[in-house]
Image (cartoon, rainbow, N blue to C red; front, top):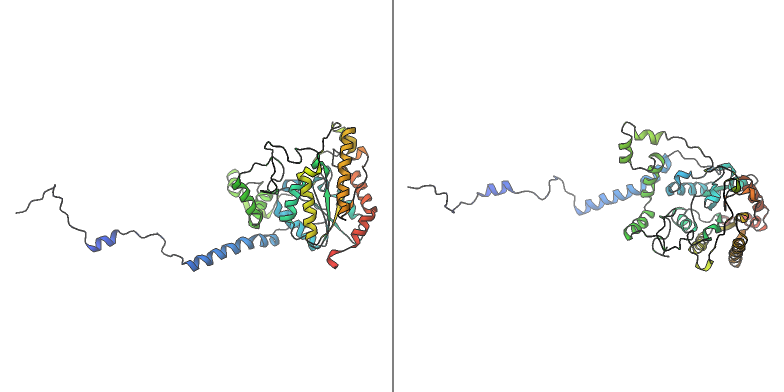
Length: 385
């Protein structure tokens, strides 16, 4: 006679079929890719990443004219700037590269230096390649990473000595300081004392420069979604169709960013600007490297050394400025780089320390066209050699 004993530790093994029934497979997917299939999938993904920005450049209805400029709100849309450069090269336009002085801070697109150069340009057309806030350290990165199509061309490069006027503008101060176009400056060398981005951020910026898809994605955010990603924009605009923003973008007016009036009517005062030694200037070093980079690409480079508003400087500061100006001229002459250094326009043709008003741009354009070095430079076509 047998009885059930609850304390009996003896047990019987589960039958083989029961074991198989409780086995869990490694994954839930019914189809798994082999190593070769993963390689094909990765290749297709990379091709898509490379092809989508190029395809979009044909689909997006953007037509550039010589007088067009990058809108201020798109100042960090480097994908759009790259398209602008490509368009200029295709149309055989001479790109005038520089900061907000070339861009035209206090004037309309038809009152800029490039516009007035086109009024009596003959067979050459000049395009506004200015970008707001591009100090030389940033301008070098812009030319290196987003203007690679500028090869074997005539190029005008703007030199603005305002960026060498103080340690703050030269980015030499030891404390952390925010500045324009931080993603364009050298991330590792030379070291910029006031730039304190983490190593991870610097590496991410370096990678982004070589991946057009990232710049294109930023372009979509800036142009169509007010700088927001699609998720954030949709959350703030729950009843709007994002495709409408892309297919029917709002038109943008091109007007001066600030009132067009002389500096003394805006309450600005005479300044005692310190200036720094060129030998220690990070901005001057970056400008020289940009000239050399453009020349290495077989471009015929012409430098325009725009004058600052000396009427706004104290006597001592004006003397230091003129010494810096002369040193830059000597460097250009020693390296046989074609350049022009127009005389200082009248006081009422300046809006601040560096930006001319429309009459100042007219005067600079006339001085440039009358410059002998400019006349020799414009008849030499590097693409014909």
